[in-house]
Amino acid sequence: MDNFQMLYWYWLVFGMILILLELAIPSFTIFWFGLGALVVGLLLLLVPGLSLTLQVLVWVIASAAFVLFWFKVLKPRMTDKTTSGIAREAVLGETAMVTRVPEGDRRGEIRFSVPMLGSDIWPFICDDEVAVGDRVAVREISGNTMLVKIVRNTQSKGEG
Figure 1: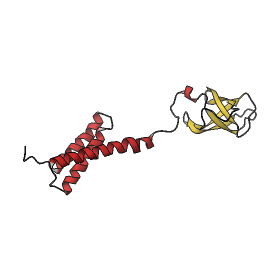
Figure 2: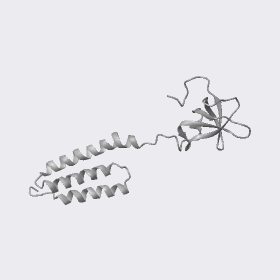
Figure 3: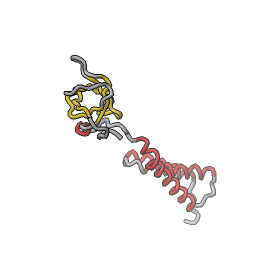
Figure 4: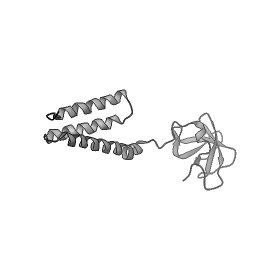
C-alpha cells in the first residue's frame, strides 16, 4: 500500500461519480463533495507529486468550502421572497395600498408590496369609502377579487 498513488483521473472519475450520484440521491450535498474531488483532480494534474494525505486534506477543505458557500451565500439568495404559492389563508390580514378607487361597476385596484398568490395587483371590493393611497387589509378572497377593509393604524401585518 506504500506504493499506491492516486492519479489525477481517479479524482476526476470519483468526482463525476459523486455528481452523478446526486441524480439518484437528491440532497444537493453530495454534489459539492464531487466538485471538491474535481478540484483535487485538477490540482493533481498541475502538481502530480502530492501525497495522498495532502490530496484527501485538499478534498475535505474544498468540499467543506463548497458546502459552506452553498448554504451561507448561494442558497439564501435563491429563496423566493414572494408569497406566490402560499395558502389563501396566509393572505388574510395582509395590507396593500389602493391604486385605483372603485367607480360604478368597475372594481378598485390594490397593490401589495410583495406579490400575493402570484400577483401584486388585485381588484378589490370595500364596504367603506376609500381614496387612492389608503392602506387596506384583506379580510376575504372571493374568486379573483380581494374583499378588504380600511386600516386605521400605521402598523399592520404586511408592513415593516
